[in-house]
Image (cartoon, rainbow, N blue to C red; front, side, top):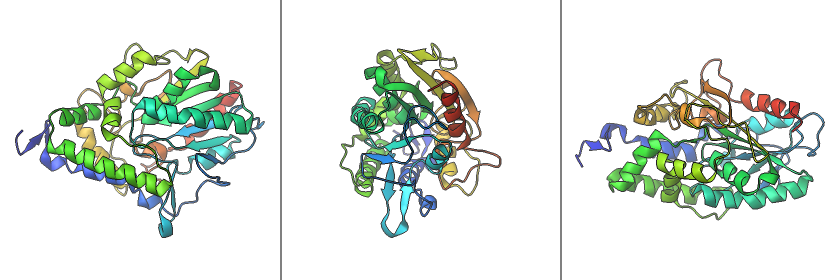
Length: 339
């Protein structure tokens, strides 16, 4: 490999790997923001009212984080850092019962899904609800789809938020680094390992972390294999609409486009760099617009990058953009359907 190239991207752009991972683990501009109310210990955070709340959806909403994600990080004197910044409180204000769960920051969709199953079972037991709504960001979408495939009787709906249903062009680029055993692959694996350890420590968990397995789940080949085994809601073609319902589970998705929307948001610089890996379609910096489609596509053109769609970092988005609104609107949609 040339000393000036790594998988087709100039080395001057390769600093994105470290910056991206660091930003995901350290969105420090959100520290000090109010955490969701009425917290209880892991594995579930209770932040809503009764499962049969007349003002919100019938079933609890379960929020499932993506790769490198967490439920909440305790940063000591710096404060607590929630993953779903402002989203939980907005859903609770809408009358929804909300649970925030945590699975491995890095692992396969299947391992993460198996970790989610007992948490969903606990939520059903605690609330007395018959089903839940799973909303997964990024890799959290496959994690949620796994549970719906294994336990469809427990799941009313699955919603993918910037989910790589058909994989990620950036994931394909990363796969090439690993396959070619480049220095970039070593950097990715080393940083990912440290991030996994940090997330475990700061969240008070001891979940298994496997960076290579996580990356293998999110490139196009890994996603295609997962789709063959868990086809619910998957469109026949990336830009199409998938079945709105399968095995009694409703499927939805929304995603954003564009990488740089706010010059004050450090994630925008990283998304602008990772976005250079995209040549087939417009994306949000990590997931392509068409690749994100699952079930009923609500939007695929929100002016939000991959961080901003969960209101990170620090809620710094472009003028007029609203990352929280789609979650509130979705809660109303589910309620209108009697779900």
